Structures are given as structure tokens and as C-alpha cells.
Image (cartoon, rainbow, N blue to C red; front, side, top):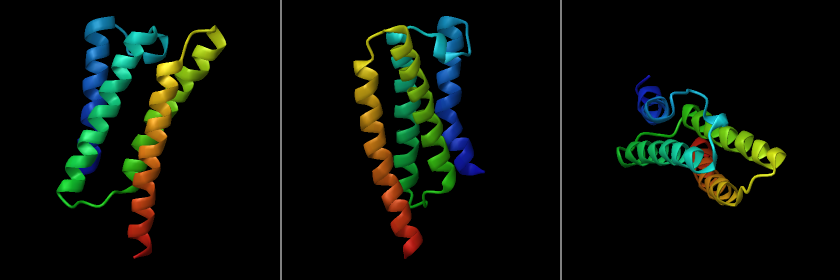
Length: 116
């Protein structure tokens, strides 16, 4: 339960920013730079909370992988929408590739802990 609260903090902060600045809870309808700001809030907050938990020697759970998957899914949905609308999506592609690499690193660490 404690991990769920820790991982939910960046999501709540991101949606509060979204409501305060853009008066919406739907990040998919945002234009490119605004969506990237929202996405950075999610990613940086999530990985900051992940590093805090790692520094406290708390094991990574499946909740962590679910949050990483949902954040990645949001980026992929926005990427597909950008392709369909013919918008430039270069920065989002770079961010998604970096996020996949970092997620794979954490998943491999999680698998190694399960094997031991």
C-alpha cells in the first residue's frame, strides 16, 4: 500500500498541473510541448520515487512494473495519435526509447532478484 501511494504522487501532481494549466484531465488532447511537459512530470516523478525506494533497499514489486507500463502506454497512445495526425513526434520517440531502456534495466534487476 505504501508503494502505491508513493507511485501515485507523481500522477496526482501531473494531473493537478494539467487541471490548473489546461482545465482538462485528458492528456491525449494536449498539443506537443504541453503533452511533453506533462509526460516529463510523470516520468521524472515516477523514476525519482523509484530511486528513493531503491535507496531505502525496498524491493521492486509488480506495482512498479504496472506504473511503468501505464506511463509507457500513455506515450505510445500519444505517439500513434501523432502519426495519425501527421504531427512531428521525434522528441516523444526519443523519450519512449529511453524509457524502454530504463524499464528493461529495472525489469532485469527484478527478474534477478526473483531468481535468487
